Image (cartoon, one colour):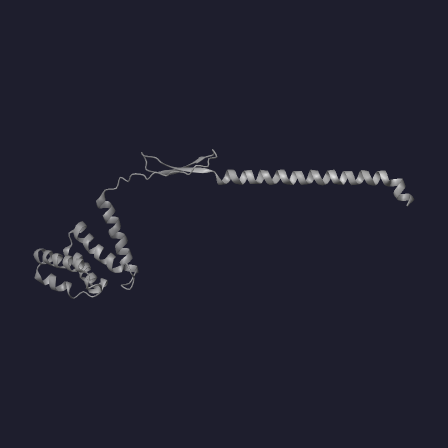
Length: 180
């Protein structure tokens, strides 16, 4: 008991120092958490703008460090591609699609029909156009649009290639048969 009476002042001083240290550490943790939250908020609000250089046609990203809560509105850029070039790209995509997929695929018949019309429009290849549309009519014989376009294309094949070529169309039963 004498020890406690003799050292009571030191014990009280130690308790006060520990209490102050505890409060300082708690305040430091609190302020560091606020700093982290502020940094995360700034990162999340960081805006980027996509800029198109009209002379070169190259896009680049410009970073905007101003913190805003407003949404970014991206305006569509005008394409300088002509419609014929767009159709050629669609034709290439359709040909690739037909090579990879099978008639069981939901879009296959539509792509087949569309490719036939693109053969006619882009290349004036009435035989291949009629052949693709003919295959579409085989897979979907209820579609009147396919049938009407097939009959129209058969007339063009007969006129430009001869009656024999019109008969050859009916021998086609698969996409691979067209080039044979």
